Amino acid sequence: MSRLLEELGHEVLVANPRKLRMIYDSDSKNDRADAETLARVARMDAKLLDAIRHRKEATQVDLAAVRSRDVLIKARTQLINHVRGVVKLVGMRLPKSSAPSFHKKASRGVIPELLKEALAPILETLEEISQQVRNYDRQIKQLSREKYPETELLTQVSGIGNLTALTYVLTLENPQRFARSRTVGSFLGLRPRQGDSGKQQPQLRITKAGDSLLRRLLVNSAQHLLGHFGQDCDLRRWGLELAKRGGKNAKKRAAVAVARKLAVLLHRLWSWGEVYDPFYQSQSQAVPISVS
Image (cartoon, rainbow, N blue to C red; front, side, top):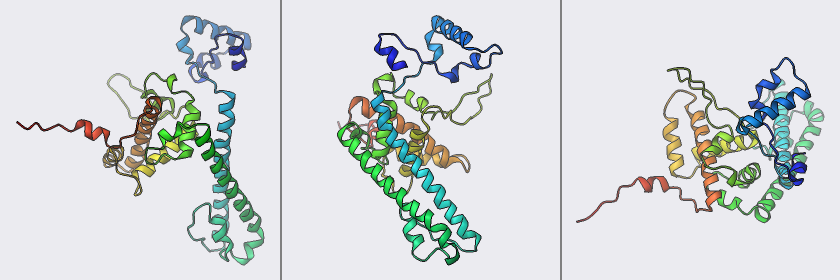
């Protein structure tokens, strides 16, 4: 509907329902009253609506492939957990294995004889799901190369692959919609909530606003960057220093903080088409030595 109204030349404001509690908390809620409230708020100050933007139809179609892959990954994980749980009930444990190769290892005589008939269909389903996931991976790689070449700018960063880069581009759609790169972290729900009152400034969890899939992918990329296989860079060093502080949740908080910085960094690279320098921050802070 918003796309149709825009094609007809109207200015369209799609209100963010999270910001309009006055409507769904009202004790006299009906369509006519809701429309009047929206009109009054828009006339007073359109920013109060915190208007959202719907994606283009072509973007939604391409994003459907990414989301469909994510659904298959979740289904595969649930089926693997089911197989492991059933086998554990008879006093056995399956060996460690990656998700794509789980059905192969489980089929090589590891499953107890009395459970083979019950679990064989699930292993066949896991094999089919893994094949479909590989097909989606090829489709995502092809989309990135042919239709969204800007993803190559994002994959310069360690830990950012084709999947995360394409999801980032399709979710934001247009980098110019953000006046500052820093606001992307808030848009994706990676900044802490604020509940200040007087001198009290409690530390709260992140807002988790925006797209949950992209937020999860960025956190996974941050965990890879901070892990054993992450390449050395300013962002990794900063995250590791942050992980040393605090208690047992310090590593999780550091991963979220690095994910927020990744969101900002990717927007910067995309907007300006810059070549990624992993040690830009340390080089800019170095003090040159003058020789007289």
